[in-house]
Amino acid sequence: MRFDTVIKNGTIVTATDTYASDIGISDGRISAIGQGLPVENAGKVIDAAELQVMPGGIDVHTHLDMPFGGTTTLIDFAIQYKGQTLRQAFDGWMAKAEGKAATDYAFHCIITDLGDAQLEEMGQLVREGVSSFKLFMAYPGVFMLDDATIFRAMSQAAKYGGLICMHAENGGAIDVIVRRALAEGKRAPKYHALTRPTTAEAEATSRAIALAEMAGAPVYIVHLSCNEALEKVREARDRGLPAYAETCPQYLFLSIENFDVPGFEGAKYVFTPPLREKWHQEKLWQGLAKDTLQVVSTDHCPFCYKEQKELGKDDFTKIPNGGPGIEHRMSLVYSGGVHGKRFSANRFVQLVSTAPAKLFGLYPRKGTIAVGSDADLVLFDPNEEQVISAKTHHMRVDYSMFEGIRIKGVAKTVLSRGRVVIEGGKFVGRPGAGEFVRRQTYAGV
Ligand code: URP
Ligand code: ZN
Ligand code: ZN
Image 1 (cartoon, rainbow, N blue to C red):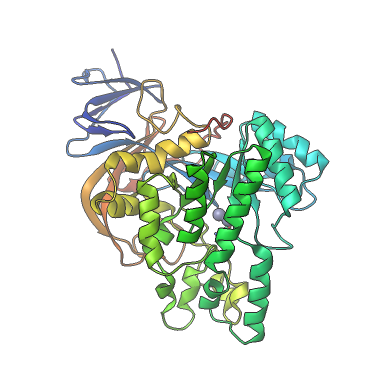
Image 2 (tube, helix red, strand yellow; image 1 turned 180 degrees about the horizontal axis):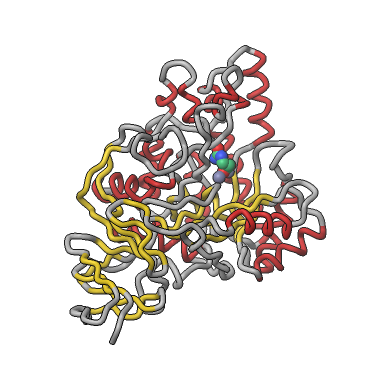
């Protein structure tokens, strides 16, 4: 038996099991799992003593293509602008990724304009591996769709095996609250958060679930930020509905208090939904432990503080919404979840890799460690500590929203389809080596 690579002496951690074993890799896939695999003829031997070997992280909510920190697959968003076909959106984003992505990637399609032609295209896109669609209940005049359009999209998704990802906030009500705030001269970054109440998120979450129930479709709520919305998902799941939700590290580690910083610095925390009161954090952690929430993604959407966030210096509505997070998702969730004694390392793998793979049609090619699966692997040191800082991070953005937070648990070596892309914490991959992954249809978890 000859392997391209053998990973020796590690402890394999999957969503279900923890055990000591070697892993043999051939042609980018896992070809053997067992103790004492032969290394004599192996092209490369990696010693994983003291390390946990996990399936590569899957971040299903990013707004660009720069992977790091143990994540080996991204699902980014191809945006259909008004007047465009869905195909134009897909082709546009495929062209953007061409030659740049260092690890594998896929796309959801953001639908902003749904005529009869685009409705038909949904089936074609699903067949081509774009098997999920993001819809917005917020941002009137830009992304927001009305209930009838959402219902039509959900019905079509149900027909073709697509999954609707929903940005659930009541955009109409928020718009009125925002205009009132501006009229009262409230222009600082914190008013972005204060004009987007938790009730607006809970109402839209509830409406999205009701529309999906009527359409006979599954629904996946993106970037859930607060307990009120969590309760809506819990009620739906208790009734047996296929309702799913993700949260993001910013809602687990940051709160509205982050706006108490000098000058315009609060702009670093302007994203949507906004930061909430601190007590929501523990509710979200509990939601992750109890499977009310199935996934942690990042909603990585990096805008530099200089020149980009600064566009909103005199008016919070002009601050670009979004923050960077892709690099630290796995370390943050491991720190707060596993070291915080809220859930096991297996549940951690489920949340950051296996459930995303199953929900979004990547499993079992990705999201697990099994013979035949892609050799997307993370060699993770559960005890290494680091302090997050923009001075040391690898994302091309001039601040970190997690600046100063201590993490315990760090990806040391990362393989993408058998190729080492991170070694000793350094990027050694190659832009262009990542491939588009055609995803299967939604099959439930
Ligand atoms: O503020 C955010 N989240 N920006 C990214 C777009 C979105 O709604 O996911
Ligand atoms: Zn969104
Ligand atoms: Zn997003």
